[in-house]
Length: 89
Image 1 (cartoon, rainbow, N blue to C red):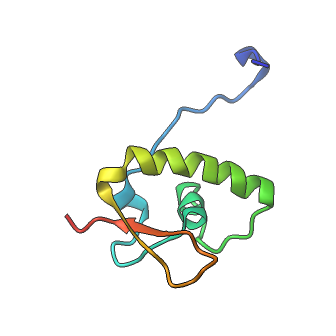
Image 2 (cartoon, rainbow, N blue to C red):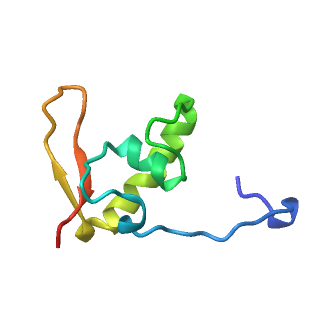
Image 3 (cartoon, rainbow, N blue to C red):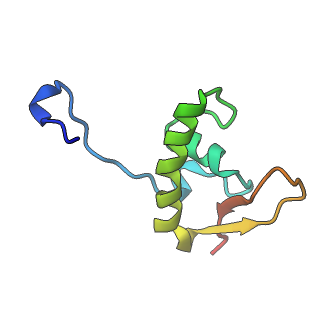
């Protein structure tokens, strides 16, 4: 159910990062790792399942929006769906 803005003391502006600002051009990342980087966290930061799922929910649309700047690779490990990084263009 919608909540009235006036119930909050602190309303923040929405800010999206450019892929080049958060991804190392020499590395590939999992979606959860990208989600952590988008939050300013280290890729190996410990998160609760709930927080990780919320961060991933934010990361996927960001990845789609920035698809022209990203590439992906099929990983060798069966438990990793994909690895993503900056395009070399």
